[in-house]
Amino acid sequence: VIRVARLAAMLAVFALLVPAAPAWAACPKTSLPAIEDEVMCPICGVPLANAGGPQAEHEREYIRDHVDACQSKRQIKDALVAEYGEEVLAMPGSSGFDLAAYLVPAGGLLLAALALAAGALRWRRGRDDDDAAGLGAGAESAGHAGPGEPPAGADLDKDLQRYDL
Amino acid sequence: MQRKRSPYAMPAMLAVAALLALLAYGVAQTRGGDQIDRTVAAGKREFAPIRTVKKLAGNETTSLADYRGKVVLLNFWASWCDPCKAESPAIERAYEKYKDRGFVVLGAGVDDLTRDAQAFARRYHLTYPIVKYGSLNASRDFGTRAMPESFVIDRRGRIVTLRRYQVDDKWLNANIPPILAEDR
Image (tube, rainbow over all chains, first blue to last red; front, side, top):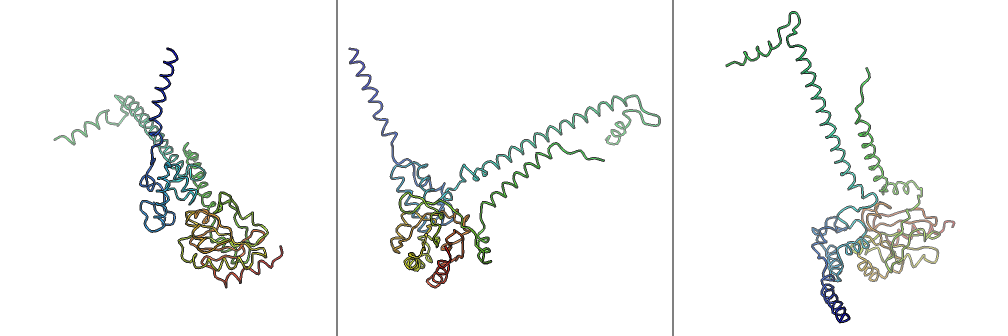
């Protein structure tokens, strides 16, 4: 009985795996429109999606052949790089000098954020110092007007009178 | 009175210096075509850049270093370029004429699918070795701007003369024999 149960379990697992295989190997894995936005027509100097003429058509035909051969987008882009060189990719590569295209803007943003944070911190510290100085000065001057100076609050009264409607 | 330096001045200067260094590196990577033209015009010779490239047939690779000891006509072409079609028979003729004296043509297909380049080679009965050369690399190495362009390289691997347009029998027969006659 145990043997039969084991066999049944194995058959069940096998039955589950068999329908999964065609789904995994589904073709096509990508399409021409999905790729032509991300690659260049090197001869035309524009993205393939915007390119016309016989050479652009040759490149599209080449991509279609690879799509029909059930290749993935990554595989087709690699094949295009092998045919035309790195310049066929619409985006800079992710190694060597091309990496600078991603690192420089990211570094710039980081620096800008740091500069903003530092500036905000400085401004806030300056404001706190001013407030503290203002409070100190107010406390010192209250009721301690020097000889010949108007008493504390006199300026404020004057200003209020000026704007009194 | 001494001015107080901001604590951010040094990092900012370093960032600017890093950006300038990056820019200089990028510019240095692109070899100006003008530089080769100026050197050749001055009657001097500079070594041709060595880059490993894939042969049109099969998966083998090669480079100009493999042709040291021979006079090489490095000819950049593309199957879609009309002047390239026009010059191909003359180049094949020169190859047949001088190959026994240590001359070789290295055809460099640019911006072409392998199958298009192969069809071109078959159509024009090209028997000399052909490689695939990306346009960006061709521009970086030799300052190419448009197809066809040809460079004559001596037995030591130095560029002797060049033509940034199609070549013909007259130009080939005037430029190749004197370089072949030079001491090995």
